[in-house]
Length: 199
Image (tube, rainbow, N blue to C red; front, top):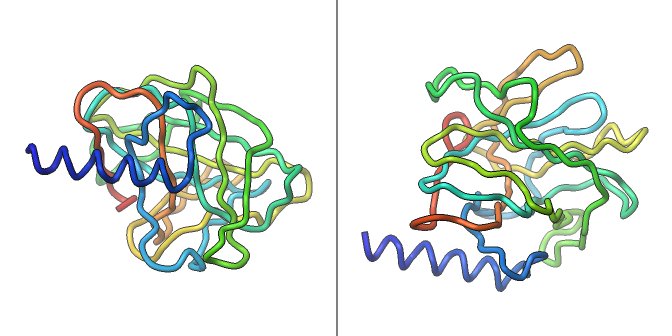
């Protein structure tokens, strides 16, 4: 347990140093690591579709900022970031509920990714953010809500899975792990895990 805690703290500090923090008091407490190239398949999350990836935390936490990787946006684009609870806590049948626990629409800080042409690092300060409980399935959604931006994409990596919800409210499962980092204040040990299907 001690070794695991030290490793998670190391990962958190490394991520914080690599990306910088929009909130000086924030700690990286959850991250879907960008394994391999970021120039990988993406989940469409523009005006016609919303992508969700699920996660479970090992400790209670308050999310105050989110970082993710994507492509196809302009610096003036507005994004809708939402955190949703799960319809069921059975990982095998989990879907995001319709109404978000937390939602914010804003332009985001974005910079080109130096290692992967066409990929952009995005971040959004959520202010007071959202309090999340440990051992509960939540879903993060990131959507470009700028008019006409139909093809903005949330970068993923082969393996795992996500949910894509169309405008009719129908959920479809896809085969990608989406890259994102949650920052904020956490109680207890750092850490967490993606639940099914978001490995």
